[in-house]
Image (tube, rainbow, N blue to C red; front, side):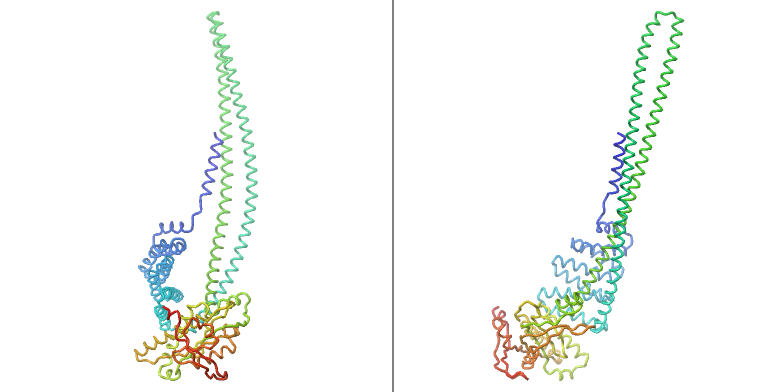
Length: 554
């Protein structure tokens, strides 16, 4: 019975030690319930909103709104912008575009107030994506134009953004090296912890052997107790025999005289008292021995259990701390790597960026069927004389941003460069064979945009641009030039012919060569112009693209 009590106590203490590890979300919620200051509650609500974002968007939105309201009450524009962005992402996960757009716009407002340029750009990207999803391209353009105007008013130029990018990239590389160094240190610490764990296992084996010895000693003591109990039974049997003898003597006493009877009785009582005192003394000694053995066994078991708990707890704490630190560092490294990759993809095509990251350089490659598009503004010199330099650059930037936005809707089109008032892009720069439907469709959308922009400028009484567009399909060589600042470009006679197509086009028209016409003739309504003289190229068959045949069908 007593041994069962000892084992039950051991199991209870081990159960208390094994009692669980709560998730980080539960720990955050517990901290929130115990928080007293508004600032602490605001930060914990924001952390819970981020933690719930991937598992429960509704709870993420609720916690985000709580953090947002607390940030507004404390006048913390930065936290208000960050919490609004998390709320917008929550609605985005719920496919609630209307609420997502509202909160991303709120993010823009608070990011402007806090001066968070990166967060403003992210919110602008999200709002623009919502507008594109709804096929509201003009709204998407206005959202991007609004952000550009804000940066222009703040005095931030494209060169400033490039410089900031270079600084951030250098800082990220430095932080990446430091984080990798810290990761190596953590790996070394984990290896040391493994060695400590092996040592603890050895100590545990020694303690288990000691426990076996104690159990063996306990069994020996138990055998001694059993022997004592047998002695008590023997004494009790002897007492019984004595009592039987006393009864026998009692019968004899009746036949004796009174005096002899009294003497005999006194002697018998003295003998019985002596035997009884001896039995009581032996019983007390046996109980004291049992109590002492039980106390010693309990004390040894408690000390062993306490040492075992301390060893397990120290190992658990060290292992959990190292694991948490390593997880946090890996997460930070991954976030910075994704950010660097995103910035690199804004400069180079995905395949070229991957090749640069893997090999440190990119080889020039030949593509046999690439479609090149050139645009050029009519009477650019005369119009530039009517505008101030600032107005001219702003008007060019407005048009080129719209061109960038239009071609970004098509995965197979890559912007190559701008040369003065000329804009150049191409499709088919990949290993898979492609037909230039998208680039011809994009050229028509560019002319539609310029026509709408022209009507707006006429209404305001301002000069406007009209563009000629030329397209040709053929082989080119593409690659990266430069060392410090990468520049992706294409070369070949195809590029020269595309430029001739543009120079022989008319304002508001898309002029394509016969090689391009043969590829898109069943998708677009084209008008044959005949053979037209091109500088240094002789006579070339040319076609005007009027509209998409799918649009005619609709």
